[in-house]
Image 1 (spheres, helix red, strand yellow):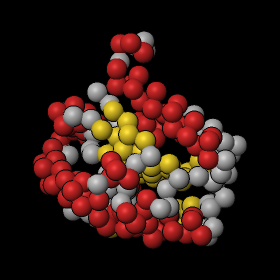
Image 2: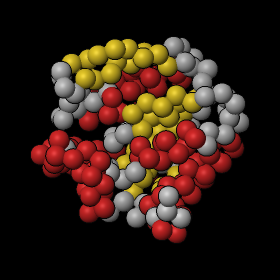
Image 3: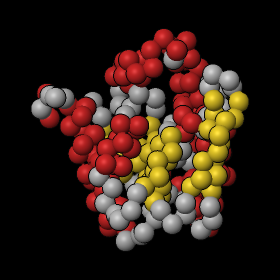
Length: 193
């Protein structure tokens, strides 16, 4: 395993997770909602996994990746709407939420998953920080990274299945950034090399 100084991306993600855990602790809430947004390959999923490992509150945290909610390659906005309706609004009202996983191979909804309103929740994915979701997120994170680094990480992660969809997905992310200004909605901005 490389030392921290050998991997600047891991180092930046570790620092960010520690700071976000401090933000959560400062809330004094038993069931906080953390929203992690950023463009594809920025490090959202890696950051969320590190935050789960450092979760500063008693009890477990529920992690929901928008990759499980987007209904296909043209579904960025629909995936965010699903998160809002199925997860964030019920959680905010103290109700049990239920979301359906998108089966990318079959191109249809699959099994259901419950979201316990008594527990904290992390929702990570491109598009999650919008004016509609921001009021439901206690800690709102924008992950920033240069396009070349993001693309290299995303294609290394997802391989050739993602390559033909990169531009199509990036156009949806760009519309989100221009329309919603997620960086301005964030309570914390994370820079990843």
